[in-house]
Image (cartoon, rainbow, N blue to C red; front, side, top):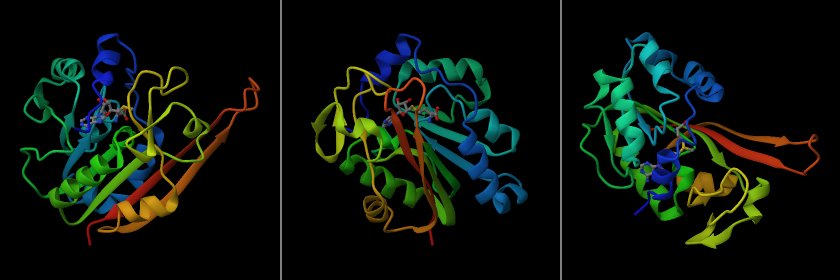
Length: 223
Ligand SMILES: C[S@@+](CC[C@H](N)C(=O)[O-])C[C@H]1O[C@@H](n2cnc3c(N)ncnc32)[C@H](O)[C@@H]1O
């Protein structure tokens, strides 16, 4: 089981409702998916779409949008907001097989797989690989880095990269959090050709609380 049920509770409490497209996702899609967009849009699968922040971007680009999300509460809200997508936004755990036909041009994951443990991420990446067309693109954005200050917080869980039970900070109450380094990402994406890999580090000076955010963006192709 990959999905942490804590997400269901967070959405039922009306928290974590990000609805503006994430700027890194906008940039990465425009930089790495030009041929897909130019050819008429293509099919995109989002893993863990949450409150749907990235949906308007893909609809505006004319892409055929699909998503799998573990929280029933948030999926019901998305069905109300996007009645045309009811059959394309499913409740489910993407670490298990899902009913969407293969041949996606793009699989997007923003900060979702990074809320699973290593075994579940490996399974989800294999399924995503199988669902992509040859030459298809995987974009992973905001996979938390071991340089994030909270890598030393919470409690050890499942494997050396995964922690849980945070009681404060951005990871409070969201179950598992996975932290990667470069070598681990290269292992996880061994089946893919990595086209782009960057680590974002943000150190806070005011308030002076020594907070450091760190996450990875990765773009990989099914060769
Ligand atoms: C940090 S939120 C990101 C939401 C969205 N991708 C965004 O960029 O705003 C993580 C989401 O992943 C979902 N999620 C985590 N693990 C999942 C799994 N194994 N299967 C389906 N959804 C999952 C959670 O329910 C949550 O909505």
